[in-house]
Amino acid sequence: MFFLSLKSKHLKAAFSLFAALLLTVIGGVVYVSNEASIPASKSGSFSMKAGTPDERIAFFLQFGYEAEENPVSVKEVVIPHEFDEVYNKYNELQKSQGLDLTDYKGVRVKSWSYEILNYPGYENSGTIRGNLLTYEGIVIACDVSNIELDGFMEKLF
Image (cartoon, one colour):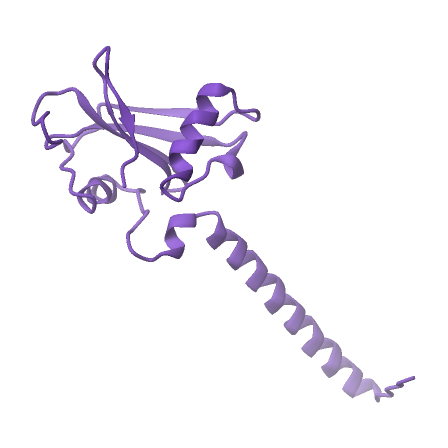
């Protein structure tokens, strides 16, 4: 058995040191869990920032897509608590590019849709959209789609 005896002044110092250490550990855990909520940031190979118009345009550019300066649409949506077949398919698309909407169930996010000007075979057609879902200025989901009746949706990267 191990016993430790401390004088009153040492006890205060030890308690303060323990409290500071505990706060540091808690802060580290919170920081790491926040980083984990943005999976693509772990790779460090591209920016997921989308809090400003310039950041959203730059997001598309880093994958070779030129987007119209102003979005075609902006709206707030709530990611459902339970995914139906459509959301499950969409989330599978997201998972294929290192993203996952599972952690955002029940969360209100922003949906941005931009006209893509240089999609191969559809240059300046007005039918190709770059779509982003953002949370607190960070891209949590994205895709490129064709809005024609027989259109398509595919991963952005």
